[in-house]
Structures are given as structure tokens and as C-alpha cells.
Image (cartoon, rainbow, N blue to C red; front, side, top):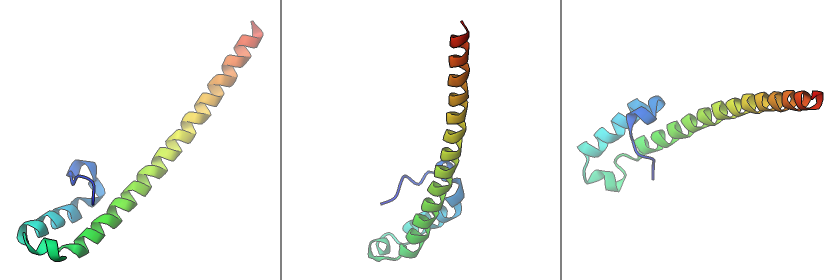
Amino acid sequence: MHPPLTLHRHPMCVEIIELFQKCHEDHPIGKFFGECTELKLKLDRCFREEKALRRKANFEESKKFKERLKAYRKEMSENSSEE
């Protein structure tokens, strides 16, 4: 099973998605018997790579957010102790 094949959500995999959809159109019965399996495997690999890049970017963003939050809390605690 794969996620919805919307092109705007998977910019890295557009070419493979289009080939996969064309394969399904060209082989309406064969798709049930493995005609498009090779493209499906490529699509799965592409989705995994895309997800790994997204995960890494999200992790970096969360690290930056945690650092800003920590600095903010430190600043607030210093301000409250001065008063």
C-alpha cells in the first residue's frame, strides 16, 4: 500500500509516480499480476528517501526550536530573579 499519489505532496518522486500511473492505465489487468511491480518498488524507495529527508529537516528544526526555547526560559528566569 502506498500513500495517495498526489504530485504536489511528493516532489522528489513525480517522475516515478507518473510512470506508475501510466503503467496502471496501460495494463488494467496486468497490474494485478505484477506488471507494474518494479515501478512500485522504485516508488516505495523514493517515498522512503523522501521521508528520511523530511525527518532529518524536522529534527534540525526541532533542535533549533528547543535551543530558542531554552534561551527564552533562561532569559525569563534571569528577569524574574532580578525583580
